[in-house]
Length: 89
Image (cartoon, rainbow, N blue to C red):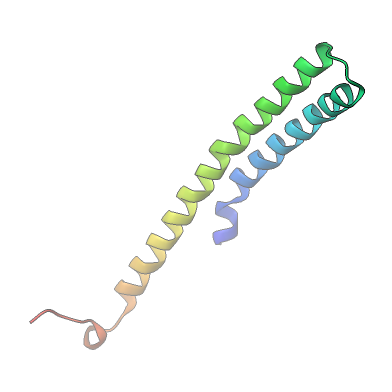
């Protein structure tokens, strides 16, 4: 079930991406019209919050992938027959 390990981080990344997109709309509109209003400040804040959620979720995915690979190689090593194991000497 390796895909279930990534369910949490991917969900957090999706939520962060939604915040970034929702914040990007007023920023794009106000900068496109050449105005500087409070909508720009609010939009930049929402984008920042979204990216603040995305970055730790990416790190979380990296840790999950590292743990998954480590568990896989440990399982492979334990399941290998004794004659396939290489020895020094």
